[in-house]
Image (cartoon, rainbow, N blue to C red; front, side, top):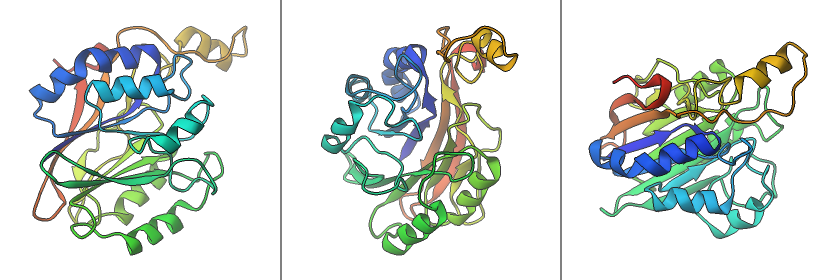
Length: 267
């Protein structure tokens, strides 16, 4: 079992790269299951829509996760109640539309749990992520409730992401960070068998400031004339991780960073 996880998709550039390349990349890399964080996929760079989600599903995405921008396009609040392939952070204050965890069946009848969480430090207020994670681990078990578990931890700071990785070590197949849009060079398998990377990076134009137009972003930092952030629209890079899973244990045999196209292309 090989799982591809792609980091935050940013704007039209990121969406186009996925729609034009993902099906081929699934074949080339022998991928069985695809998870994408879509919270920046709208043309404005914040939120996502029903149309974007359905475009993703049509080109091979199995699950879309999100983060702090999940509600920025208001139409998604109704759609998320109808579509179990779209998740929001589980530790959002309740009641909230949608859900933060679901179990999906593959074509080989394997069960993959996907858990969407959001950090507490420098993020929008939400329930304590470690309390929610402890309750989750008490309620659900690897190889009992699902064959594999992927955790998308949408957070700002490295230490909190590190900590949640160790918290789930041995209890999840993959813990991967999202939100900061720059891929980290620390893909590894933790001591108890869980694959981990601090941030998956983004699927967007890296000739930018974390996906946003660089000239406008620089002007904002320098307090010059600027407008609201808007996405860069150059050739995008797809960025994430590929995990090879152990079907007997539910843990990871191998994790590799995944980079395709655009400015970060390793080819």
